[in-house]
Image (cartoon, rainbow, N blue to C red; front, side, top):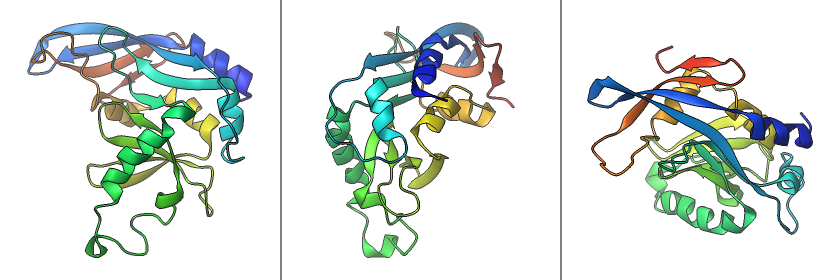
Length: 206
């Protein structure tokens, strides 16, 4: 998909989460979602990998599946200006690893030179783009629970396309970090189903 088409698709895509209250499932709630973007800004010289340069000429940032009431969102592709802070936070998980916890395969050899381009908000999990080796330009997600590095897409455009068409497993992953808290922190919600304006219906039970 071309970047101008992708931008239109992101801005047009919206819908609602059908949620049940955690620990009181008889209570239900509809949570509308959309994707929030910011305009592109001057980014300097970005590496010509993974459609990174073209992406940031079109977008400044994207918050995926944002609930504007609670501020929750499923993923955040951050502006270039925020990458150093994200890098520092990511390395806080990597630097403490000692020799007994590492080998030729873990962590991946590209970890210390990758770009940290986004995060799962409020989770300590990050979106990474390797800059070296055969993985250069791919998009990976780091989950600090188990120190897992999960392949997400071959490039940034494919990553965004996949974000807008989640399956049940991906939606369950979103639900694990979104609670839609407003005021009383004891009232939290679990996503049971996504329904969007393209006719897509996805369940966390599938």
